[in-house]
Amino acid sequence: DQKVGFIGLGAMGWPIAGHLAKRFETLVWNRTFAKAEAHAREFGSRAVPLEKIAEAEVIFTCVPVSQDVDDLARALLPHLHPGTLWIDHTSGEPEQAKQTALKLAEQGVRYLDAPLSGGVVGAENARSTVMVGGEAADFERARPFLETYCAKIVHVGPLGAGHAVKAVNNALLAVNLWALSEGMVALVKQGVNPGLALEAINASSGRSNVSENLFPSRVVTRSFPNTFALGLLAKDLGICTDVIEAAGTPAPVLRQVREFFAIAKREIGSSEVDHTAVAQLLERWSGVEIR
Ligand code: NDP
Image (tube, rainbow, N blue to C red; front, side):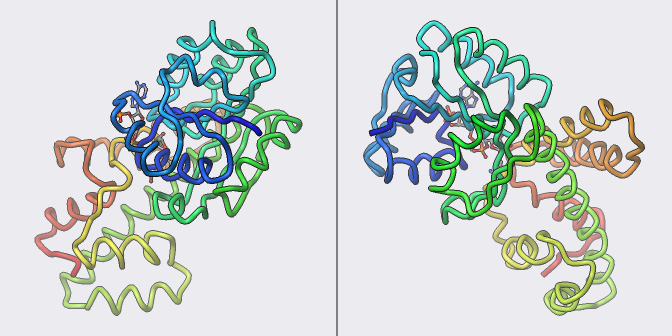
């Protein structure tokens, strides 16, 4: 029976590691260790000290940023066995991932950058999308594990390509979130019912995940559940800027949206709020609520 190890039981890691635990012997570690113990009670995984994660044939990480992954790789390095596969579900940086992969390769460990999309709801329902960067043989080895919680699995290219695609995806999320917020406050200010506006837009060419899912379930309902932190999305916009810089291609909109979200973080005064708080910022600036 194959043993897997999971590091980082946050909003995304918690349900993903839960799905793995149903199919594989699953070792878990979390910085706040009580969460690992709670995970073990809920899903039958096993909470272990960090070094013990190295006993797994496949190691998963899902932590905030690539630097955290690199720190974990450094800490685990003396314990790791050749042939281990490391699947990184962090939305990370292509260049840092290449450095981490080199470090792990010294110990014979294979690495894939494999960021997820679909949010916490997608992760809970085993309907995530995963975009994978790395070598084909490693990707094929990862597939049966990814199949336990992903509805869509795409090998997008070599090492770093997964992170790059994810950063562009999230920049598109940010553009849609900001732009729809601007449009909706203008409509509501002039007396249009936001539910009806969304009903029309969602049957039209301006629709997006933001208009189809986020606005109806989080903004109009005023629930703003905290599932994806504003600070994490702002982090992704920084990565997208790095991707643009590396390509040397024109990207005035994607560059701007990073700046907008930096302003939003300052104005809101927190990185911890849900990313949909951007709609509330536009509401504040406009003196209306999208409800
Ligand atoms: P959370 O903030 O909910 O969880 C972060 C996890 O990482 C926690 O388990 C935390 O431990 C751990 N952690 C934080 N810093 C360190 C560190 N320095 N060393 C070791 N462990 C650490 O984040 P999410 O689960 O929301 O996000 C994780 C990654 O997934 C991010 O890169 C994010 O951008 C991405 N993502 C998030 C989505 C979402 O909808 N939330 C969707 C798709 C991708 P502790 O419990 O001790 O704080």
